[in-house]
Length: 113
Image (cartoon, rainbow, N blue to C red; front, side):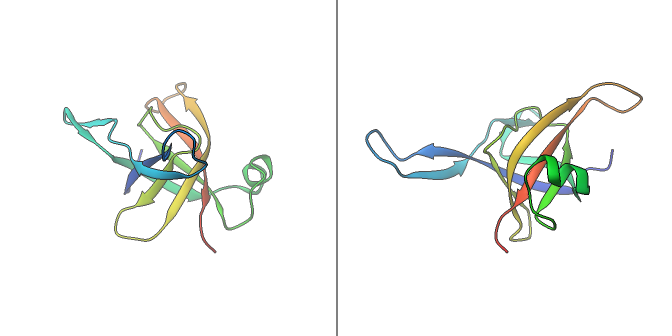
């Protein structure tokens, strides 16, 4: 599996008790050579029309990502290294069958335009 991009992961946190504000903070819950890291290798592709429809997404804003990182969950944000491309994780499926290495398929919604 070609994991050609490095993405940095953030998760949403509330700013404190009694507030309605929330912010994204770096999530360093992944291990890279035994060292905690927020970086994850991923392959990002434009989602198929069927996947876009199932995700209630918009065309040219819905993407599919493939990764070996098991800790990505709905609501997390990934930012592609070296770009301003930011995506929100909308869904996740574990694919552990067939001839490929067990991996995760995540549905991503591109932020911005």
